[in-house]
Amino acid sequence: MSIDEGTAAKVAKLARIKVEPDQLPHLAAEFNNILGFIEQLGEVDVTGVEPMVSVTPMRLKRRQDGVTDGNMQDKILSNAPDAREGFFAVPKVVE
Image (cartoon, rainbow, N blue to C red; front, side, top):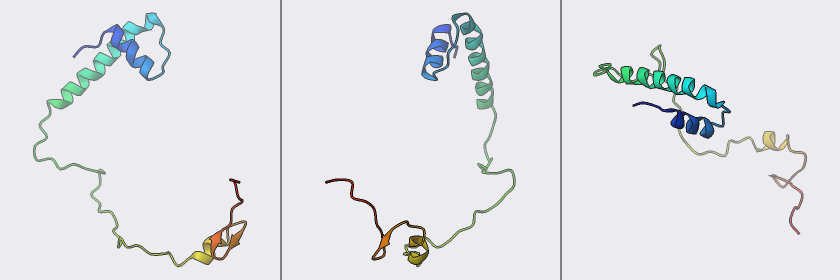
């Protein structure tokens, strides 16, 4: 795949990057270098390689996925400037 100056100009416009017309050949060449590198990565044999999240093997901590009310209503409402009957009180905005 080859990127020409027109495509480079379109990519620059979509990315909202101001590129002077005399810089478009250089930008197109850079895009072609990047695409060439990506094509080289496609040639690598990765059969049998497990996907990784990190370079060190680790397992994320798990917790019970249950719905609770948090049992912290008093703590949460203590931060409110105005709380009434167990709820946040807000000023009326629609008449």
